[in-house]
Amino acid sequence: MAAPLVELRDVSLGYGNETILDDLTFDVERSDFLALVGPNGAGKTTLLRAIGGILAPVHGRVVRHGGVTIGYVPQERELDPVFPLSAIDVVLQGRIARLGPWRRPGAADLEVARRAMAHAGVTALEPAPFRELSGGQKQRVLIARALAAEPALMVLDEPTSGTDPASERAIMDLLRRLHEAGHLTIVMATHNLGLVGNYARRIALVDRERRLFRLGVAGEILTDDVLTRLYGREIRVRQVDGWRTIFAGGTA
View 1 (spheres, rainbow, N blue to C red):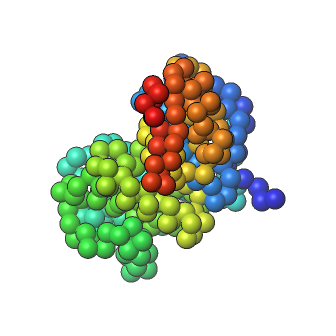
View 2: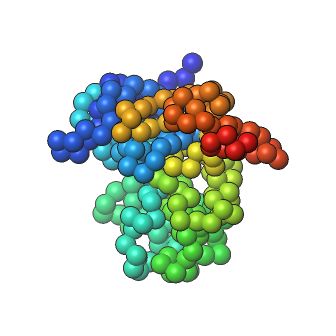
View 3: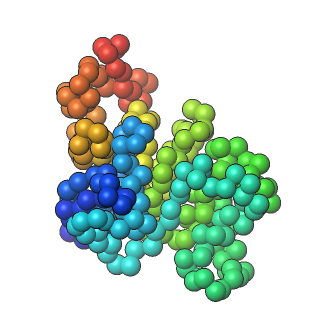
């Protein structure tokens, strides 16, 4: 059995003197599609940053095997709103980790960036100013930037935030294609359990206020009994036109 891509052992996470999440032990498996799901402020982004190597644990250890390369997709709101770059310039930023701080991207890097844009379906946006793109277009360009790093692991923070329902589905369909076609390991944070439940292989429910962390395959987590007990209210999970749909309060 192959070793996991990332191991977390007895991990506590926080900032300064504030602990956000405590005593986490689990693996990110190779070729996994793992969704971290919870309300705003639940600790999802904190956990995502620890998995991606951006945040060191307060306690415990996070081990990344095999020199894993990581592509990071931040929340779009974290970027400078006057980002004075074209879409292709943004995607080329994904090559920096490969090149190091003192080398400039060359023709080979431009080819990789353009290939990443093609995979993300944004080739036509190459010369467009990033700041003038729609929310969905920005997210696709940021995904292309992560792909340009040629990662084994992609971590995404609320990749469908600020997009309309059609764009949400399109972005998630894109992630599923990337996952299936290239065996890319994906870990994403989201508050949208109803959406991601139709794509992720495994789901981790995270809520710092309730000291909740529960991880399992989607079919185990997304059941009436589990969700009703976890959320303390009646939850129903149903298939509607082949789409897993979650209803609250006995509405189905």
